[in-house]
Length: 298
Image 1 (tube, rainbow, N blue to C red):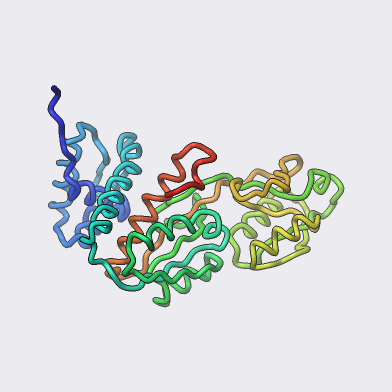
Image 2 (image 1 turned 135 degrees about the vertical axis):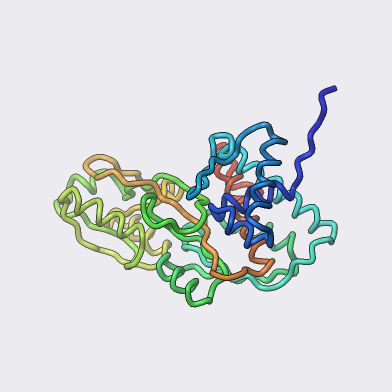
């Protein structure tokens, strides 16, 4: 029989924190260890796996191809460990966690994730706030949130740890809307919505005239306007309802949407750390599952 190797979960956790912090020094500060100790733990994990997981130079830490493949598996491994401990009553994590998220992302991807977390961590009180990304960033800076899922530009500021990426598309009631409109009618959330900004920038760059015909902070309100034929909008592909049409002809290309997890400054509560790990693991699993399964049990 071949010799079996058991992964050391402490080494796996050190690897995950390095990936999240993008720094051995900051990972050491979070875990209460020295930079050299964290570096040694990652090397020991690489030796156990027989694969290089991180490439290092004096200024940057980056995942190798093998590290990219191992990252979601590592998150699932620690999530399962935490769920087992919680189920056996060994989880003593308690307190309140204040999470912020964009309404559209929260509606589609978070309910089952947060429900499962609440059941496995009954002594943690969750408070969820849905708002526009820039408003969530303000709340995070003010100390009103412990963490937030925020929309970010793929080539923009390095905000947090990326947890989701999917194509953005133009959406409307039917394709004729683009052909019959000289000035495109735009349905969007009010500023400072990232998707509104992305739509306007793409149209302005191609010289296509537009006007805001319907503005609503509510996703339900925007969808109602689209169904009424009041204009077109920008949405992540997964969020397009079956009764609306993805529009491509005569419209500029859009960069992918990205959602990142960002934490408040300072030492986060243990309950917030547990929720952050849980969200990262659960969203990795949703993203990697075949279409049609991602909305199932997490």
